[in-house]
Length: 137
Image (cartoon, rainbow, N blue to C red):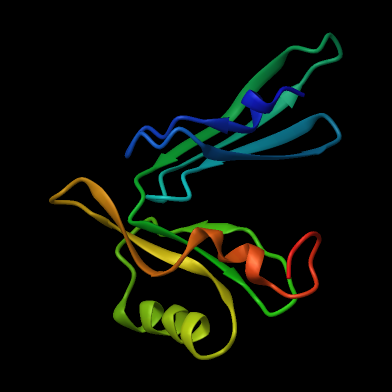
């Protein structure tokens, strides 16, 4: 697999490195492309034939309203996206985890008027501050 196959340019904010996650089961696979900046997401499901060709079974593209990553103390987790405006309660819960409960990560929100994402809390690079992980403090 080539490194360029692990990311794609975001179709919403133009960030060059939207993450591509895949999984497979039998003759079926799925692929999710998600921008960790604005939350833009594409989800696809494919069916694979014996000859190596595939048929796209399902495809959904969703506008992002922000993105976040929550890493519990000593743990690992993935990136997540908002596909509608998050409620104040949801934002408050994420902020409490990042500021009071020892979780690492970040929270960004998409500004529809400015067509730009803003970092609200944390930092995407804080994942390296988690104690006891490979190569970190």
